[in-house]
Image (tube, rainbow over all chains, first blue to last red; front, side):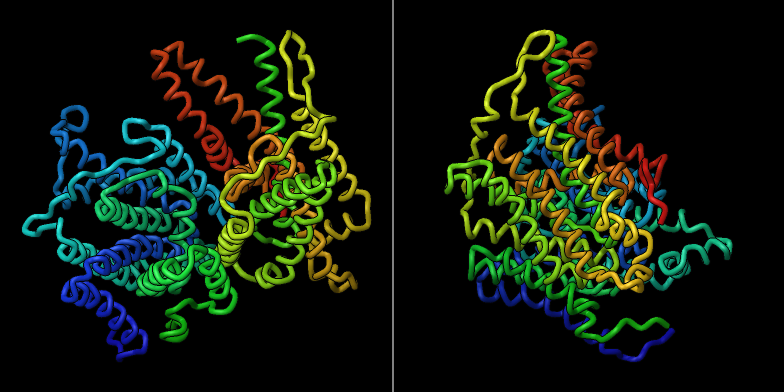
Length: 327
Length: 306
């Protein structure tokens, strides 16, 4: 299906280019802080793209995606710490500081854990689904808090940023480019999922599960697959987030983080390809700008958020690119 | 493990359960009648605790503080309902979660703005200081027993209100068919404000009572909020009976888990590890219970027919 250049395409391309341009400009002006800010946007947007698969396409309101974000972070942190101490992980499995391997582990761990969580949670729906996903995240949160080997409540540091073949990840710009590249990959994944048969069925399950079942397609397995894929993408973002801050802690798994991830998606416009990126850009910039003006930035962030929920129902992408077309 | 210690822990669990019931009753009423998930319920709990602590410090009387907490939480609830919540009834749960999440940010940061980050302290009133002897030796704080008593009174009061009064009749009617009772001439938006303020007042009461046991500070409502959600989900959202049952279950399971699990594991593991694993398992326990219950009863134990 060929598409004419729409307002949405223009908005999408602009957002992607702005995010790419900022770090280069920042390096040229010797302001490395802005590179870090852009990296933070790319990583959080990646997590939100993950959530958007479950939330936007599948209509699954997961209030526990911080669990996968945190699991990814812990996977990166644990592997790196063991490798740094030159010790094997357990059962003699060697640890590693190679990012691609760490990502694979983070993705695999999140997938394996999301499978049973999704299988149980998807037995429920509506508010119960929101709350049971929250409950699972809380389980993992409390597990992390009471696990002293990896810092318990305080979390633990990653001493040296993990490595990527051919790039110096200790420099802000190459690390940004890695995160940005992964964000684009995830967006491509989202786009191809949405356009695929799988995506069509998933969206049909959101719109009318009964009718879908009547056609002979049980929604459960489709939703479960979406939930697992969604968790894996968010877990990858968690691994990058830990590397960005060189720190993993239970706060990555807290219910506040789950709420923030939902906010990122909704702020931008759920189900929209670039919604998560638009939402994350606004959120991180607000956090930064309001944080510079007043210590009470959360108060104003709350007000703005409330305004968006009450009055701008399609989120930012709704403002930029008009209503989503169902066609 | 003596009998007295066991009874003490059971009573602690019951006290936690009763406190959770005050929170959960409001949440479940609001969900049952208006179909709204209110994450900001913990903020109303905080409002109650702050109102009580400030008034009690100013007047020297815990009792006036308690009245103030009811009034302040109910007023805050009514204002929030009229200004914000009212616009959310027709929205999906996602919008409700987000808008009330935003309210939490506003309430928490606002409270920090007004009262600072330092915790306030609230003394147990002289009348309820002291302890009661337990069978089998040992003592139990009179104040905690009083909380249990208040909880039982509130449960009875709510039962009476909902099953025996005109307001309760309207609430039940609103739960089963809101268009119909609006068509019958009941002012439904006032009814909603009243229900919301009632739920808020219960949360404020819980906050004020717990404020004397712990410190009164910003963010105190959040752990309780999550537990209260666990309670209403276990009980079946919209069911007050479910909230009561779920609250006592969660309170007792959580408290007894923290007490029993490390000791039980000590039979199998070395003591330091047993304490560690036991502690971890205990803090996860209620969420495990909740997941199990929902896996087998996806709409909670006392599911309300919708």
